Length: 201
View (cartoon, rainbow, N blue to C red):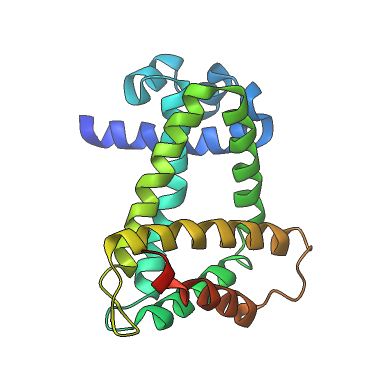
């Protein structure tokens, strides 16, 4: 195995171990336990991620990347804004029924708790989420809406609103607090938000 392959394998092992330990222990997660579970030393964590916080941020990025890649595939080019938002909403709702939805919610809540205990981590997590959110904004920018097209500024504001809307709805669905929030409900809520784009200059 080459050095690059070993590094990639060790990185994956640490991320998987971190997901398990962080989801369970939150801000009390111990670096030595994560390393031990991965079959590595804490030195490997510092070498690959720089710190425990670096590992946690990488964990979030690793967790979000496939989610946003799937969104890009679910919302093809050529749709106008409301059609794109509709497709995005329906995809998001289907993800609530995926096998990993509950563990994803657990990680999300745990990370919020960790951020409350560590301002430096909170800042780095916010930067990571904003980076992913910018990819979502790019998905909507330039699409037809009314008599014009969505500007990058409008797309950023819409992406922020949609993320907040769907994070809340997803929590409700996963916890059984929103039994009527089916695909159509998600799509209607998203369209209602996007339809006000003219006022989001």
